[in-house]
Image (cartoon, rainbow, N blue to C red):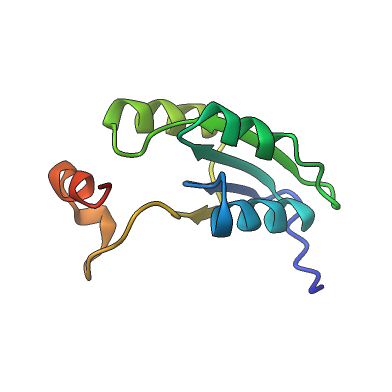
Length: 113
């Protein structure tokens, strides 16, 4: 395994209860990052939040549905309450061929189905 030494770094991962998102959360935490993640279901969050990293990192889960603006805002406020995020992994939905920072809410919601 490559030693990335992410000690002291804060990461945020969306759509993280299964598959690629789950693997990214574990990898970042194993390399020392403090990882906040979200998923839509309580069971998905609870399972991954119980992960014990091999390194000095931590894993903190939040229930959030990225299709809902209020839910997303609540997640972001909670995840950034302890400070800025160094690493963002946006693992939710599909992406059109444009920067998601410039998408409208309607564009974003159309990708969630």
